[in-house]
Image 1: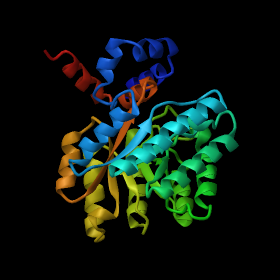
Image 2: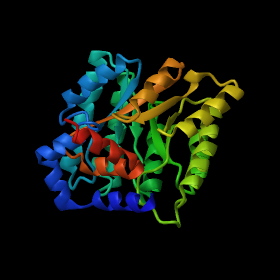
Image 3: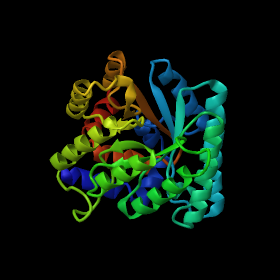
Length: 308
């Protein structure tokens, strides 16, 4: 449903709607399914509950495009707190960060410095940092920063990055990342990209996702495949079985609140599953992109919202 996707992505940039929903009881009621809460403690409690189901977690403090170095360092402090709390509580969890939240739009060197400090902290606590991918204008800058930080002494293997299957460039990017030994989370992509840079049709995106997923599971590196698409998951499972690739050689990743039944089923079959757990008051853009990715979520929300 391209129209719905474009509409939700457009709405994700609507500032008046964002202000209304992020500060209203209606917004809180709507986001409860997909957002762990407003504070780090809320997310940590959710992580403990998810871990009890045999599922790993990645924690994401929501927020994008800070406007100053002060805001960027404040955002980073939340993640430093999360890394300490993960270690203290013995959680099976790591963190995911966006470089625009670390100041990429203001000064790439600021974002790189903050990211490096977080990866050093993660290494010291036996954790891991995933660098989220944003829209295509930032793809190259993001990959350049990831490759430079990962190459630093002692940081190899402590960070990874997200690659979006809907971009034409993604196969070449994955080939480079594999050569560098960098872990990848493969997803379909959640931004509204022009046909000049991204596959416009879902069938083409799905085909590219499967092609790239096979490259990743063939690799000796531990990677993540982020999708709720059962048909794609079944094809990946069949390929791995045919190639005698162990179920714990890679992981499936899904979003908090989406397809919990499928998460539990995969765990029961011996596959590794990690749930992306977001939290924070700046939840509106994330929420709208989830509706854009999977419009069926809108029907789910409506059914639950009006349930007595």
